[in-house]
Image (tube, rainbow, N blue to C red; front, side, top):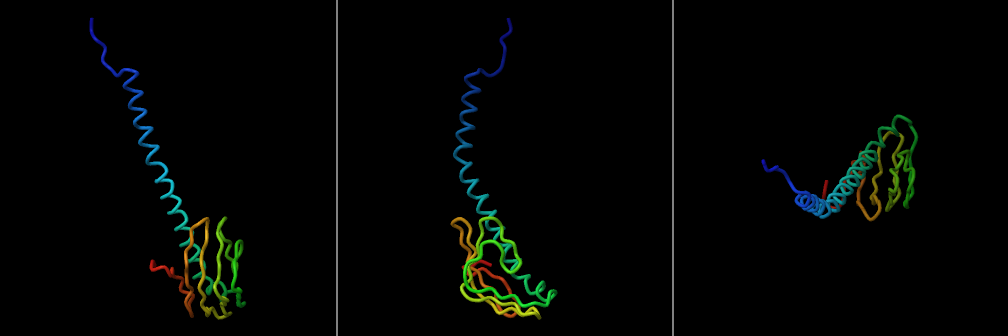
Length: 132
């Protein structure tokens, strides 16, 4: 009689257990990394939106003035993503001609903070923690 070749049920269970163990060790770190990337890309998108304010203000011809403080839904016509807040250290103004009177502040989201500055006169947005 010919012997049948193949894997036993026990060998297959051991392989599945090893794969499950490896996945269990790697998955949490991968999840944290993906969350970090998501937050960073949302922060970058907010900085780009802030830097584009002078153009939209110039089109509308109206001054935008935001007092120092915390904004959690709408900031100068920019709808913030869910869970994000902008905290301004001092007043922020964009004149009708698009000139920006700069400010500093912090983007905040669930333990993630990103200090930023909007530089005069063009509202150049930059991170102030050393990264650009």
